[in-house]
View 1 (cartoon, rainbow, N blue to C red):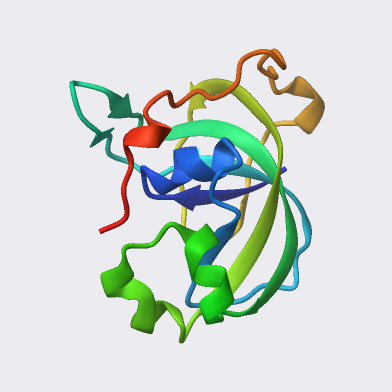
View 2 (view 1 turned 30 degrees about the vertical axis):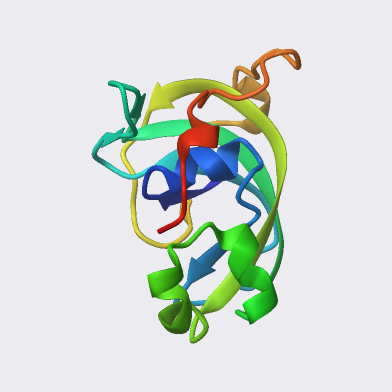
Length: 141
């Protein structure tokens, strides 16, 4: 299946469905399911909570890719200091499909293929709301 690596904590926010716009400097014609993976390196949130790096976290649908606009900034969860640079990029609009039981994965640049079938991913139960309980503590700078 197709996959995309994103730095933490943004990877967890995308997988949990809170971040629905990913800002990239490049565009793609691909639309459809994407396995969201966190890039290498853990990210410490606070109080010892860690957003894990190098893990597959969930599946989203890439719905649209278009030039970034000011209207996209809030859903991108980018720090406000990055806004002007972000506007020269592309807004990747994503819709959460489901979170999965995280497993280690080696990320790559761009959209890449992962040797796993979507049907083989272990979905988290519906009542499991977010794998990242620290989301409310994340604040944009």
